[in-house]
Length: 73
Image 1 (cartoon, helix red, strand yellow):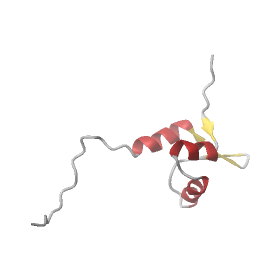
Image 2: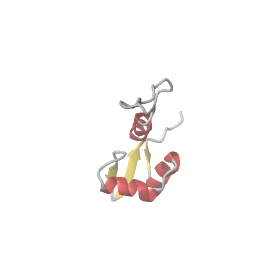
Image 3: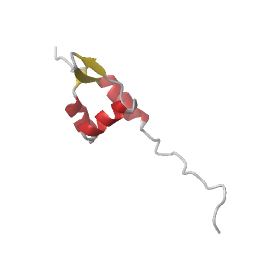
């Protein structure tokens, strides 16, 4: 049986998202972004939380564009 990894460190998550470790740290300081765990002083992200973060940024392909209330002639 293969083991699935459930927790990832900052570098791994940054690579998954195409972001820098510094941006993940800045998000944590602002109390935003992906929920995380602090285990023995090390930050770890749960795979489900990373996937949820990605999914929350998803936009449907058939989403209608916003229409201005005051269209220009």
